[in-house]
Length: 462
Image 1 (spheres, one colour):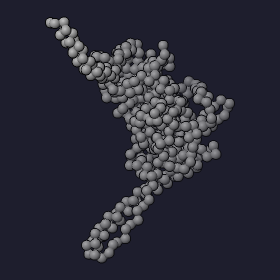
Image 2 (image 1 turned 180 degrees about the vertical axis):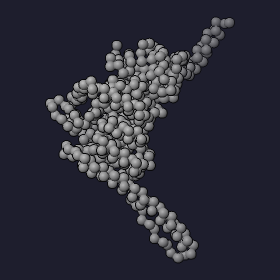
Image 3 (image 1 turned 90 degrees about the vertical axis):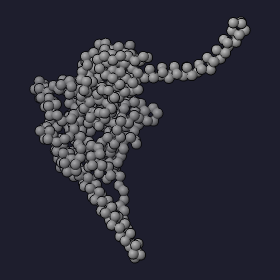
């Protein structure tokens, strides 16, 4: 070949290559991007809290933020990021079934007008400084409670725990429950008669909602009659009938009716046996799906609760009789004082007899089959970070590891109505998980990594 022709062919080849290079580069970026969305975790002990059970030497393949495969032998896809977790333990991301996250401190004490239609998502504080602390302790999902000083506090929501820096949150379930406080201090005091008066006040709200429903039902019946008469008279050319007056819409009553239609559960914040029974009566009378929250005296009514379809949210540290803060001050309202995050503490000086009684009580709850989840013992946002500690405490009270760990994972997710997304590690679930260097309820175990939607959101510095 002539030297000039050879040189010309080289130039043409280069120009053609240069023309198609950007497309080749884009294809490379595209395929590498897909590969980077795949993560394989291998050689770990996995507590799935779901159908696969406990996997002694398990593997999890994550793709696009979801668990694509979970089992004992999974091949690593080409380009996948692989984590060898030999000697480590994996559990689902922890679920906090009640929290004051994303709620400003002054709103914790706000009472105001009773408004069942208050939606917590419309008044949250996106830049909550507690969030980074919560995440590093493995809590990836939380229920946000509305303000607690009202009798009817409003509607809560279930969200993924993240900073909300762009003014948005990952909402798993809006209108997740209606919060009602059946016990509220008046002048820092309470009594049986006062609590009975409060019960009747809440009952009257539901009765008014029933009357509101009847009013609308009567209006619709009259409207149909009016339309028929109007048509008949128009055909006979004999004038028009009088149109019925349309009732005024009431959003608060609409919310109460939705609760009565079981569109969402009602979370009754109660403590004493009389208030727990009042909540059960309201549930039976108005057909409510009930979640009992706090309910320190649930053990006195365990036989009664077993006959119902309620769910229970509580904590071994809850005790309305002896809330203490440094300085010797006492009283249930002490939790609402302006304290720093580390000021609150929970003294526990139980003797052998008390310990045995506690073990028997919590074991009976586990055997009862009542859906149960752990919640923090107070309304401080930072308390949500101790969910694993609360589970360890419950484990020490005689509950099984499955029951205690389930109370902050799968069972909490079921009660919140989000078990199709979080709470267990199964194929198709969100890849929210926690990697530890030891057993999940061992107080000496440290969290190594926290994944949310397949992404590492916190990792222990080496």
